Length: 457
Ligand SMILES: *[C@@H]1O[C@H](CO)[C@@H](O)[C@H](O)[C@H]1NC(C)=O
Ligand SMILES: *[C@@H]1O[C@H](CO)[C@@H](O)[C@H](O)[C@H]1NC(C)=O
Ligand SMILES: *[C@@H]1O[C@H](CO)[C@@H](O)[C@H](O)[C@H]1NC(C)=O
Ligand SMILES: *[C@@H]1O[C@H](CO)[C@@H](O)[C@H](O)[C@H]1NC(C)=O
Ligand SMILES: *[C@@H]1O[C@H](CO)[C@@H](O)[C@H](O)[C@H]1NC(C)=O
Image (cartoon, rainbow, N blue to C red):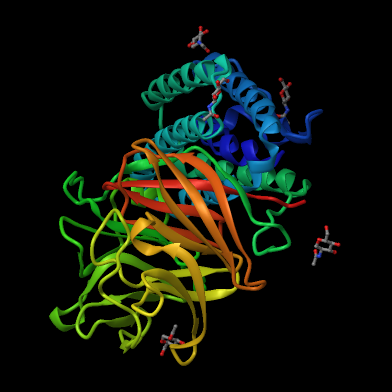
């Protein structure tokens, strides 16, 4: 399984870059596919003043890590594809190492810093796996210990000789190419992204808790975060966040990837001018445009991030009287799934029950509507997945449930009880993203997400 390899190879290969180059010819680096289907890179370490024994130990620990994670991952194989995006980010990190650092000194600092970030990311991934799959296996504890040990070794390695950097850098690039070739020999099973050939959601994972919002403001309980549900080229890994102490929406912050979101390192932000602000935090980003509830006039608002154009459409029947239970002013809830763009609202005619409207993306008009039996004010939030609306409500302070589903294709409704734990009681936004099949929740100021498991039978 390639998953763990992408993750750990950067760590191994980065460390190898510090062996003085005259001590190892490329003939002594070979790669092969191991018995578990993993990539194995053999490096014959010379006996010099360089702490080769510690490095070798680190490699062995890495191999053990790979195998242990594989055993864990096999147990949860139905979810492994979902983690592919984490992997891509880590691989991107490795790519950047070779591009950045034209000056030797920068390179040294950068490389060790990245190595530490990779270790931290690995630690957080292990912790997410542990949480998401409810495993109390002691394997996780030993993984933590080993990660800490590797961090110590990285710190020790950093104090050794850093001469010959350009040559080492060249060797590093070469080794990396070799490892990539080895990786290419293996097929990575593609996740079922975009496939709606199932009978709906059967369960959600435990919450994956990112961190407190990027302002580190516990009082910013109104907000939202997530990814573009139909990204334009080049912004596939972009994340957005907006948060504030009231339901007013005016600022959106952007991050090149998940790591930058967690590091609170935004690549920029936009601010809606006074006449264009919104309410309620049930916005999404779709095709590089923000869809949000505009306050004046009360309407569907659209802001195209590509050309900076604002647009709006009034839905005459949509009422300001009905909001979801955790927050006020949530009258228009935007959603995007495999079938396109939607808006959920309630009206006097629907007697406060949720109406599903399909948005025609080109004209930004409503092309179809469906009436559901879910009372908006008794609903925590709602989202769309594969043309089905799912509505949630509280079971208790720590537990939420999907209690109702409405299929726009068949017109059928279902009463359900798909329970899932909450990190904190209240949340101001909940949106499914078809590009990674994750559910994004802004949970009382925290970034929280869930894996969605569909019934593929
Ligand atoms: C590979 O390493 C061995 C010792 O482990 C050494 O004898 C040999 O010369 C090395 N080969 C190359 C091509 O450097
Ligand atoms: C987690 O696992 C324990 C035992 O392994 C089990 O008793 C508990 O019900 C599980 N919790 C969830 C939410 O699956
Ligand atoms: C940590 O590293 C040291 C050597 O640096 C080793 O003796 C020890 O066994 C390692 N511990 C674990 C849990 O890998
Ligand atoms: C959808 O699933 C059904 C039943 O498993 C199968 O017969 C059909 O070929 C599938 N369609 C697609 C497009 O995968
Ligand atoms: C946003 O603007 C760009 C440039 O004018 C245009 O190509 C694109 O279709 C617009 N996107 C949406 C969703 O309207």
